[in-house]
Length: 227
Length: 160
Image (cartoon, rainbow over the protein chains, first blue to last red):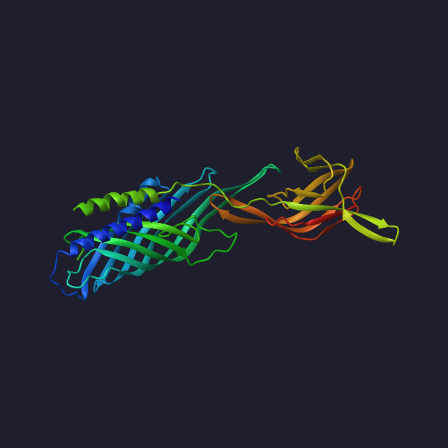
């Protein structure tokens, strides 16, 4: 439900800012040529740091990206990061991992500059990512108790290996707030491509993807500098 | 600049809204029981054939051998038993007291551990290797489904 709120707020904010930027453009009348190359933007994600703080160390993540601009329309991107989890449940079952992850993809700017207006650096982007993470994890202290027969056993699965691949559908905005300094955010719908066998050991948290499940939602709040 | 502040404020609202609470609730089905049906075989004198029908016992008490607690205590008019197999060892024995006559049902099974999730832990499912029973009030048994899992289909038939 909270994710749905986030999604609705994101859409509202998106339209709010885009309307604002189109108002600005009306003032400028002299047309400018759109450059083939519009620089490289290096960004860090603040949302993952804030989210890690809110999770109180159960999960943590940091990531950054480098994105090229081609004719202010196409934005190929590479994202890399480091993420992990150190979670102990109330049942005392624990999960631990720490690994790098990567994503490659492309964004498309859906805003077309109107005729006789200056090209804007405010963007409404939709895109796709292919994410991957090769990692190992420890799953320990899984207690199997038999209340009727009054017996129990404990299972430990140390150093389990996993290789996960997923795709993400991304939508968001980016605004130039000062010369070459950009703020932006995007929401992401992540979908795992790696399927798991029912009953087999599986990771609780996948670096770069989040909590394990066939799909989940993510949010990035980026701060960037364009070179 | 006003857009900048709008951007900051609303973006943080999104982040806080997104930060959902960490839920440890297990929502997966972990109910696995050995399902035993009771049947009564009787001779139909009119055509001299055997007729099999559900055996609604007048009274039944079921208890695991070696434990204090009972699974069924003097239950009346039932013909289906849901019994806990031992999750740790591969042999489970029950004492069945049917209409005040005692029998022992012994199940030999292979235990398979299935991992569900960190929240749910592991689930034990079973494959029945063999089953034996003493013959005081029970005539015979038949394993009709060797897999004991969350489907909870009938596994064993007991005939009187």
